[in-house]
Picture 1 (cartoon, helix red, strand yellow):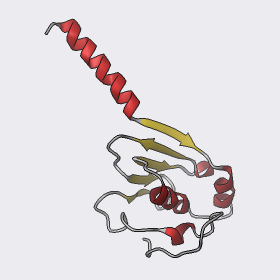
Picture 2 (cartoon, helix red, strand yellow; picture 1 turned 30 degrees about the horizontal axis):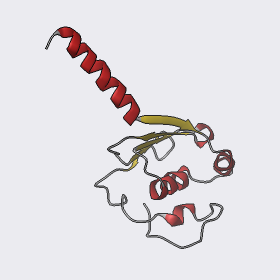
Picture 3 (cartoon, helix red, strand yellow; picture 1 turned 90 degrees about the vertical axis):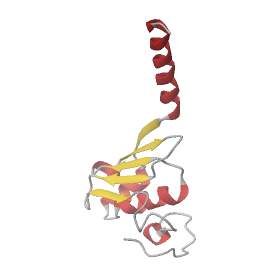
Length: 119
């Protein structure tokens, strides 16, 4: 294998990785209003955790904005720069499994069914 084919393979691998990973910055106006009125950012985090096949979430104080990432092998990890700062959940943590619906019971269209207790 010559250096050109190695370089081509690296470039092709990079393109493939770029297709497999996607990250987006998101602000949901309705939730930004709720957050401004005192709602906990963890409500949105748990809703996403319970409903979407995300890989990573990072929450930020301004407008409760968050980055959401997808990957073919999802990490399923939530971190925040909003207090309580740090990791909310990741695989292996006690709170990672189950349903967390009590955290987002005020969301529109929510059935009001209670899930297991969250931490």
